[in-house]
Image (cartoon, helix red, strand yellow):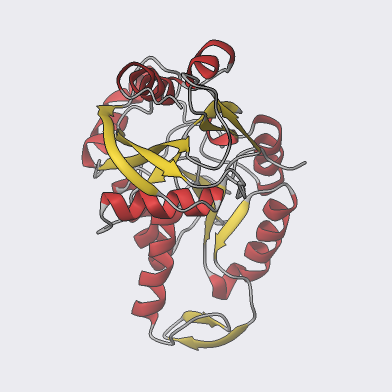
Length: 312
């Protein structure tokens, strides 16, 4: 079955010892809709001091290869996870290094077998065979959550204290129709709402995370273009706020900040990417009354309707 959410995964393990199992797992995950963003499965073409090189590697320097590999962890997103293929229970040097990065970045990590050579703390519900894991994610739409017994909460808390919690800044756009569409005098100009699996198939506004070193305006223009094909003519700011704790999407340990602007669109033809499945041009008051809008976007739309209401 195809997953509604874009769930990403990085596979870890010894290419030299377990490359066949890594390849089999990648194929299995892809069959159920899990996007394996690393490694790129190609043939092994060489080895340096026990470090296997794939044909897809951009460098034969193990340090460069490892750093490029680690970069993929930062691309997993909140629904992504790492999976360690350790059929004999051991991790090895490179995978141990990668596990440390996972723990520092608070990335969910799962294992084929229980760790036998490593003192790393792994919560219960972290050991899954590939087929069982693929079936679970296919049926539930997410990776298995960790289970923390009462007598392990102190250890789990120590690990969480080590994690490098950063802030996620997200930009959003109330896209206002400024096309040649004829409006009656006093009629509200329509705004663009998208129905998206990112928010449980509820309606939201266009937007996304700001990339490292990216300016807010550049991020907003990029997100609008990527998600709709529209050119963003950015106007005034509407609001900036912390994610709603009681909204159903709050992730403990993750600080998400939303900063939203009015964006004027000169045309109505929208080309959605895979982040949304449908869209509507709709008056703000109608959207608030009739659409199931995720709570963070609803705050912004309410403020827009109250303070920046545009009429024809």
